[in-house]
Image (cartoon, rainbow, N blue to C red):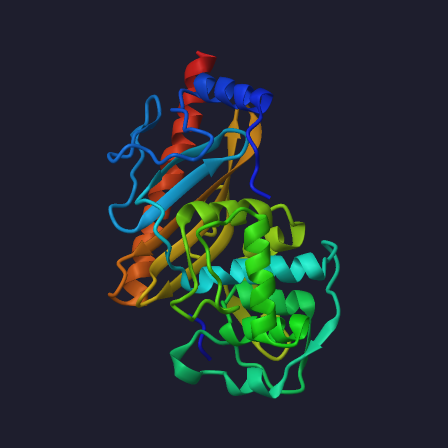
Length: 315
């Protein structure tokens, strides 16, 4: 078992965001999402510069305020299993589920069963003829990161992985992900590339779906015939963390998309971030450790800074 619509900034909205950022002491980033200065810039008074990783690229955004900065430019890099976020997004767009709904049963085909444990990929041990609900397959896609399940879902939805990839690309275009190219449903292909800014845009859209949001926040699941399966995201369990997805390979390095609920003036807001291409061309494990450490540092700095700013204004 191997388990390892671009928003437009209108004048009024921009003014409100500016007022909020100024009240929080957060440095304003231009509507185009201009990167922070090379030294990381000051994210909020009292925090000092955010602890941007020196490797790869990263981006952070706060709901209601916009970008809190970027680091590392916007050169597309391999994203490995982060591609599965788009796979889930497309599946749920075409086959929406209510929060309490399991969805239709999907039969495991011979190809998905044959791919188990092949080529060192992250796969889930399924057998031909088994039937799993759509929700169960989405859980197996996002929690243990099953590559064979990604391709199974693609065939179920579109008849072939190639046809499904066309849908992934169209969805990326609709979301304004101009620097992203998908070439497979699982992300195993190094030709599937993106940027931290584009991935933050995707996470923001995907987290609006309550089923997606519930699945990526789940620490473990029990699947009949498979037993208990643990989420690959080690940040789950940290205060406020709601997901989202890990991805690692030798060419991609370590990658992590994360979402965390923070409070701004007593109101819960979604803080999202992407850390890509950490320790690329070392080992997937080393890269993922670096991505997790960098992500933890970023979300902790912003969360603690916002809390400190709130306390300061209350005195």
